Length: 212
Image (cartoon, rainbow, N blue to C red; front, side, top):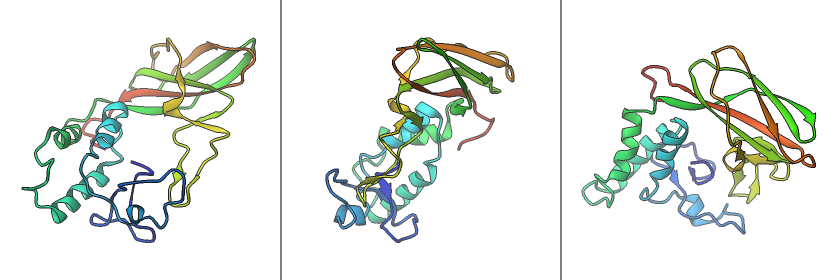
């Protein structure tokens, strides 16, 4: 959905030139690779769309999905497309038609180091919050995504100083959300020899009628 999806370098993305990259080599630049220059076929690529919606209520991928379906319809007769009518595509369509009631949203958090491995986290409770995910990681800043440029074979962010959200550890027992707008506190206790970074997200109610 990020590094593995795109349009040929230098071309403006549209419905007919965008798609998933069939192969990305991890040990060399991909800028001249035939796989990188031309998006591959659209089959077996549906999970990325589905899990983004199911896990985080994220529909930022919807245009990519619609473009991919248009390109496949143009380049392959739907009657011979191997996954036509399959539950794989239907699962994605179902997420669009019946989106999850909650979406994962970042919450600003203030962190105070108290000593002996203890940290005090405080934040304002967002409206519509159902539950929290509090992440921690020693020695690196937690970011949503570090980013990687497969054409140049180099990171966009700094992997020596940052760590992606999905790979950071969850605290064992995050508190339930309090009254919306009120201040909430959580105390983390870890290894006194480590410097920890923290990130907080909340599952909040999706606006009525929203499908994005």
